Amino acid sequence: MPVIECDVDVARDRLEEVGVTVEPGNTDHERWRATRDDATAVAYDDKVVIQGENPRKLEALLRDGGGRAHVYFDGACRGNPGPAAIGWLIVTGDGIVAEGNERIGRATNNQAEYAALITALEAAREYGYDEVHARGDSELIVKQVRGEYDTNNPELREKRVTALELLSSFDEWTLEHVPREVNNRADGLANEALDQG
Image 1 (tube, rainbow, N blue to C red):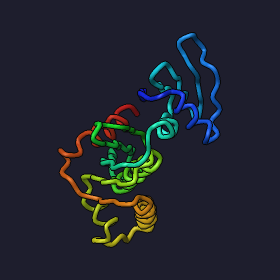
Image 2: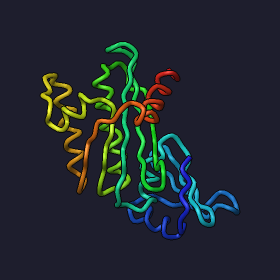
Image 3: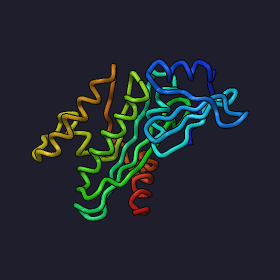
């Protein structure tokens, strides 16, 4: 449940500018409430608390955009192909800004890795970062996206194009292969989603 410390009047104006309906709070302590995409933002005196299943887009609207983010991603599957899941997180100088995981159905490990990268980049773009440095422990995916390896599989070629389009939407980007121990949080999130299935 994200908590954003901010000027709640400015936050309200920001939401109304993009067409989000803001309503009065339900209690004496609540200043206002706003709902979007299965999430509700509740404003108190100096903070906004976001509740619900999909807080990402609402949170992105309330946080200040710009700046640099480090994105970690990982895909996992049991069997190849088999039940698959993804994990990702966005880290800045303030720590972990956002993270997520979900099951993605049946996929190969490479399909899961691409899905994790694409989801993480979409989240970073929604948060409005100018610069993104993506890191994952799949050398194959990193080298395919950077153009160092060919992509023979048509589905993976399509995912590679999507990843490159997302990366090019940032002013500056890098994509780096890191050892699994550096990527352990994203790996843990992906496996946690698989375990919950």
